[in-house]
Length: 326
Image (cartoon, rainbow, N blue to C red; front, side, top):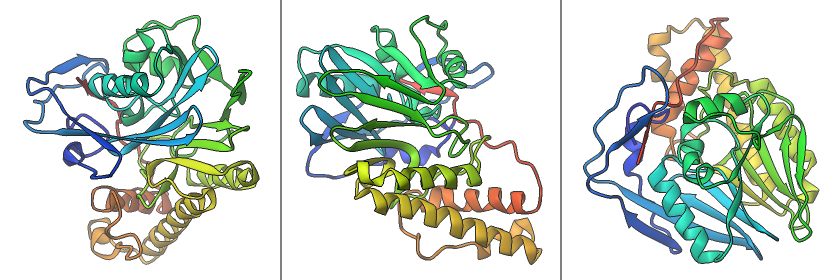
């Protein structure tokens, strides 16, 4: 991963040692892929990096897969596979595709649902789309995603304005937009009502500090979306977050709500006390979250963003997609 990505480059070397992990070294001759975002600059690939894929079966024919630090997954349908999120790049998407083929042999990927348009979840989308998968994304983000991926819009693209059901006799799948800008401007969730499984994308992080820096991020809408998820809890036995740990649904929802509310309150307190922005990092620590995934890399940036908002200062957010890497 390069510094053109929306997450710090130091995360590219993150290795998660887990018992069900499959560790695959990336090719030593890694090269920059096509730059889909106009004006983005390439950066040299890391000399040493490791890809880790952890697969967790959730129900017959339903799997969650953590590719490095991102949770993805797939669902076996009667006539193919539905993949949820595409990982960060073509190379990781290819490794995920190989993993899917090993676990669900003889089935073609028919659908690719992108929960949102951040690079770590959509960077490898072309690997699946070029092989014939149908893109499913939030209605207002389909054109943006196609543009970022450098592909012409396809007639088969599905834009989800509210709820889209993929009607499968074996495993019906509901792809839902909860109606609010939240983590991003177009976050989708994927609900399997029969299996009571929910893939929440980055609306939920569990034991992992959320990214609050998207240009369209809205804490109020995020809280409302999480409240909606809480009302759905009776229909959810397993919740797969975008980052962190799979846990009972209420745990992940409460963790994310807690982080959003405590950081917003802290930022508002610092703004009311007129603490200079330059000094925010020195007093904005959140002891309850220290040591968790992404705390060092992301938390202080989140606090500065919320501090500016408390001061009434508009922020453009951070560019999320630059160079995708093979």
